[in-house]
Length: 355
Image (cartoon, rainbow, N blue to C red; front, side, top):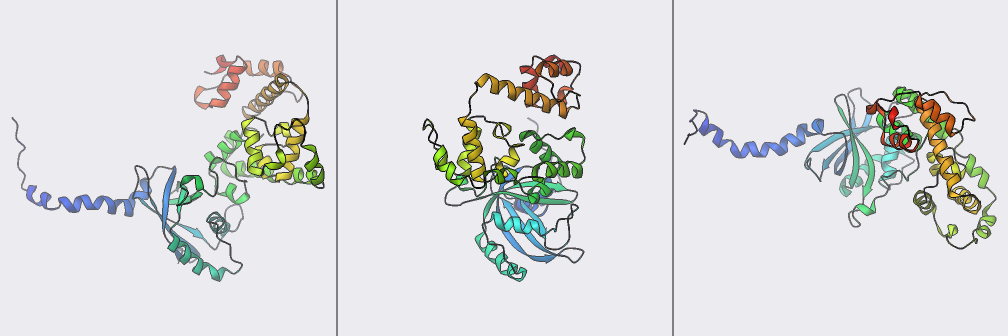
């Protein structure tokens, strides 16, 4: 039986065994954040206090520790600027306001109150879900939701599945991949969005989403009394009994598209008022027409969006056969086609175009 050869360093290595084990936690605290994969983690706030950046600007220095999963114990330091501007021209402190709002803390009118508020937040040590991103040597912690210690994860203050309203501040915090996902999930009609740089894509989304976000609200103004009396119908769904979240859930469960309800896209629908969404639903549910027509219209709309995304020229009044003919002339690299697009091409019997 082979024996392990002795080394002159063996006794010294043996002496540092306990210290070596202890250094794992120290490594996580000092350097673990830079190795943390970009993802969403459950974290607990450890510290938050005022400090200065290298350029002398006032900022909030924070540190969170991962409390679940393979990276439990990793400490992630980051900061929020109270001075300066972002590339978009927005004041950097908007992210401080957003952070306080997500923690359900009243944003002070006087910035001198911030120091005391930070002490209260640090004493509370809130547990949060946060998305970790890396930018050069910096690691960023972007809150997704706050977890209620008593209610568990179901007590989150903001839904992670996108039911919350999109604001310019949230859009400014997104990277290119997050914005591409936003475009795809919400059927935003932005041509060649895959090829746009980050600033151009952000600008295109903002123009499409915020340009006339109040138009649907205006349509519903003065309709309050009518809404109370129009929902009798068959009595199957009492829309008046549903709040905004309930109305959006009803739309999702019944696979009703935003465009069927008269909204340009999902984001504009979610950013509209409760009354506007209820009125749009009442109009849609009160209308006539077979399910087959709705399905055909939905497929036609998806096909047009597909052509716009892949820069396939089709006329404004093209029908489904015209679009199938245009798509059949093209080839699409398999690595670039997402699941929804594969499903659409399958519905159109055009999966042979995927190479």
